[in-house]
Length: 86
Image (cartoon, rainbow, N blue to C red):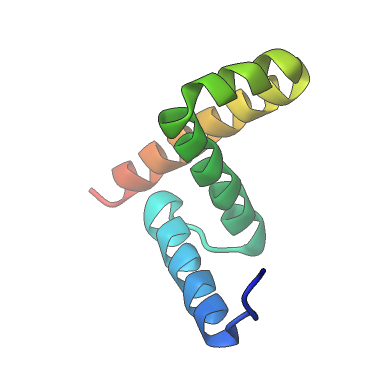
């Protein structure tokens, strides 16, 4: 059975995700936050359940290509943000 949503916890999580996005790529707009949230979940699944990820990649080749582009975009944005901070 699902627990009732705790708005304070939700707000705190949203704040954490916003700050993580800002520190990672230097932007914290809604589109960037959504991108980083998707990237973080996919990255976690890739590391913790590689067989599931392999199955998903085989079943959804178009989505795999989109996720690869997302990972490359996050990497590029992170590198640019780190270079700007030097």
